[in-house]
Amino acid sequence: MTRGCVQWRRLLVAMRWARFVALGSLVAVAAASVPTLTSAASPSVSAPAVVASPVPFGAARRAETAAYAERHYGLRTWRLTEPRVLVQHYTASTTFKSAFATFASNSRDQEYGETPGVCAHYVIDIDGTIHQLVPVTFMCRHTVGLNWTAIGIEHVGTSDASILTNRRQMAASVRLSLWLMHRHRIALRDVIGHSESLASPFYRERVASFRCRTHGDWNASSMRAYREMLHAAASKRGVDVGKTKYGARARRC
Image 1 (cartoon, helix red, strand yellow):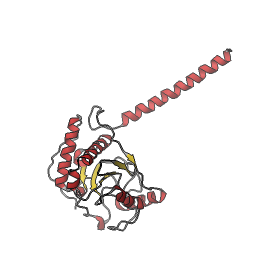
Image 2 (tube, rainbow, N blue to C red):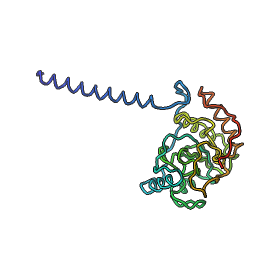
Image 3 (cartoon, rainbow, N blue to C red):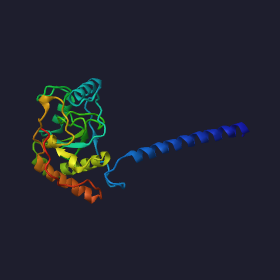
Image 4 (cartoon, rainbow, N blue to C red):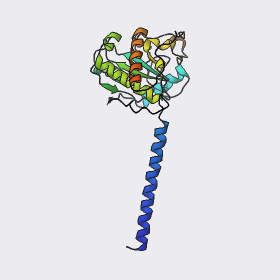
């Protein structure tokens, strides 16, 4: 082998090693930037199994979302950055298919008559299957006053009680919520039911006709039970998510 060939091979090896080191540095930086709810790493908080079931969210819907966010929150964006709240909902239907059709249609909602259409980031079916409809980096319309900073989780069902007594659905819901809390540093007190939205310190609404309006799904007593389950699951994994009981919060209306 000539001296020139040897030098060329050494150069190729050096280039490949440099790329490997650079990639390793990027991975290390990314890993270090992932927030946790505790000062130490919590490897037991793993991502649950999720089925990708995306709804259409193209340029038109993104533009509608940005216009909505500017009008209601003073934010000209369709992106969700640094979510601080998890809002629990139920679909008021009995099948995932019907819920998906509603969110995929991007129709003007019947209650407020605005675009974009309503949506949620996740829908948990009655058999415990977790469907992800929208990336958590996208803003979804699911809770007035909180869409700018909230991840929405829908449960297929027609009442809080029917979901709370469904063991498979609740196991999936608790695991998903705990993972999202761990990933985004969301405190237990900020895992709320839709009916609790007006008491959230993150509530923000610029349009007067929209203020003080909420829904009745996942009422306070149901959410107390839900947060107790979350706290128990977190304690089992050695994760500190905060207190389960708090003083009364003033409604922001």
